[in-house]
Length: 264
Image 1: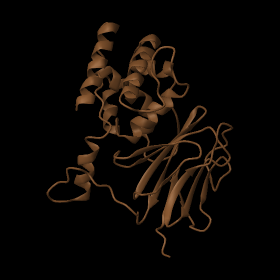
Image 2 (image 1 turned 60 degrees about the vertical axis):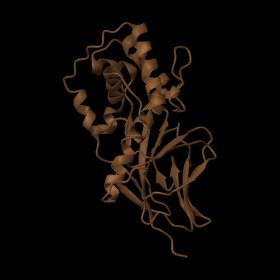
Image 3 (image 1 turned 90 degrees about the vertical axis):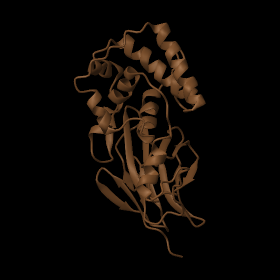
Image 4 (image 1 turned 90 degrees about the horizontal axis):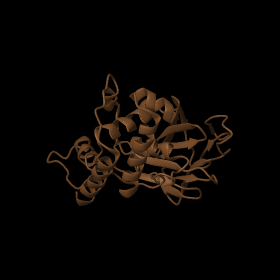
């Protein structure tokens, strides 16, 4: 049987995956991610089974976000779950303790291809990807809410290869934006609730009902769905926010934006 070549890329290093032995990723795996006590010794496994390549979560507590490079596909990989490597390039994000990691999986000849509903007349693959990317994961944000997401994702958007980064603390992100910590946390509540209402798992926005790792989940979701890109970094450079809307009006605007998303 002829196997498609699969390669994992992490921190600029390439690891070829053998269909006979597979590849383990973790604290002490074939890909040694980091000496991080919050990271499982063996967390993820890339393997070849029943004619397909798969990625499995063999950990007990951590989750991983798996997405394609255009933001058309996203899966949340819980402990014990596995999905087929059905696209030519997938990006995997996960968070262990204070650190968020990402790596790429390249499949030379994937079993499937992305198909969009509105393919262009010329049939070019790149154009198809653009059509799909424009319509997936669409949620209406206020300018300040968009700034907040960009500020949290900034370390990842500024680098050029998969690897390791730490998500800014709420205090650091608030200072970056020139906001008070109270204002930052209120807007973070609104962003998380808005995405949760639109179907994103793992956020649970709302005062008193906040997920411990909600910032990590928010960053993973925003990056994997192309909710923000490096082009949005310009918003942070010399940005002056002018949102002086009272809290109640902000909440009304948020509910209206979610309603618009549901009717789109």
